[in-house]
Image 1 (cartoon, one colour):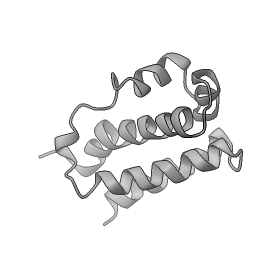
Image 2: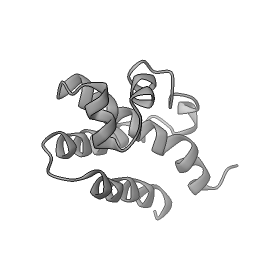
Image 3: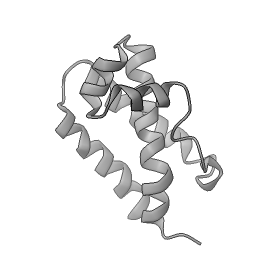
Amino acid sequence: MNPRCEVVGKYVVPLFRSLVAKELVNTYNLTQVEAAQRLGTTQAAISQYVHAKRANKGLEQLGSDVIPKIQAMATETAKKLAKKEITTDQATVDFCKLCTSFCCK
């Protein structure tokens, strides 16, 4: 059995980033470059997220009840990033909230 923080770091955070990236590109019509700038990563990483080549391994580790929670938080973070309500650095707070929600139950 893996410690919760290991599972969060290995599976939850990458999935969250992937979902945020997909929202920025698919829902808000940002280019991959724009999404990368808002998310603080590279265009190549965004491409891998959008094409499900990154962050989809180990989903069975999470459980079906967890994925909707991650999706909801990702949707909200993407909305704030797309509308420039938060900066890339401020989006880190949402990542921390996600981590805390899993580690501090």
